[in-house]
Length: 520
Image (cartoon, rainbow, N blue to C red):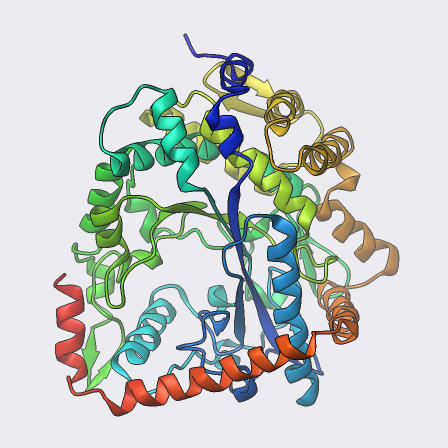
């Protein structure tokens, strides 16, 4: 019989575990497309004033040259992470305004005339830079460039070390600390996968897209204003089969039950050739088309809504870092950009994420069997396409449940956890907002997007472009303290020097470098 969360929390109250929960670590990674004043994806280089996309730790690019990525350091509270993200966006807005460009605040991309509009990200002539570029070339051959223009939020989360020590002692576990951490993180991950549909409902913000994204294919959407396609009850088309999901990866049977099986699944995928990728070729007429012809070129190609992570040493594969050091944090990857928010996310959402992830950690988490895995996948498909449909039913281990009732049950558990959180008042406020959205789907970001489009007779392209200009004005009005600005400018300049040094000191040819990397 599973232990109730209330019983677990009652036994934790007043213990060192509860005290240690007052210090939770979070960091935010946020993507966004640069675009021209005409609302087209930018064809220009990543602005040099922002530094090197290869060696700058906070401002870089993702799959395409125009897809910027902003990364905060790890903080002990959401407000500090949000404040740092704001500084990055203000610094970036100054650079973009100087070249008459904007940052697209939607997850689904702007109008794309063709794949020729999309420049694959470039990182210079070093072997590390070439590897990053060729990996992206491989993605283009495998999945097409259009998919590379989708943007989202990645939310990184971990309790501090003193929590793990106290929690291990509380549970009476006398084993290896590294193995205990990994075991508990995978328990969190299992519960996240069971219940992450709630995040898609609450924070999904991609119910519409520009018709150019699907290139005339019938994808089961309705005609919206202008050249828009909409899902009337959709929450996150980004997380649907139109987004990051793909048929080839459906062959993967990645197990999230424990670290050894997870790492083994990924290791198999990055060493197993696939006929359809072999037909592309690896190095053709002296030019690389992909890093290899395996099911995954590298681990990052695996698209999951949550990942166990560890900071890897330079040149070390992520899966080997996990094998060696165990899980260090989790990366939540199913969050859309909220286009109504200047940063795509705010502190309230971050507080909700923290309490939700702590609840996932502390709630009993049985092993996921094959049947439940199928239910989890089916629930996600339902919620991303039909999450706001009245009376929607989902499948749980306890049978079929009405989505709204299941969501209310989860929120009841979160309210109990909130009392142990660093800022209980902020957590309860975030849960209250979530409860309002459960009670009235018109309050969700996905509904607000469709309603704003319909009321103003605005296409998806027109609405998001309007918001892009509003947010740019907002960012330019935010002041960066003079000493902070000098530090940001110095860091950008230093990153350019770091890239130049990396290129100047390189001695190994790329073929040898790649082989050594893949042979790890």
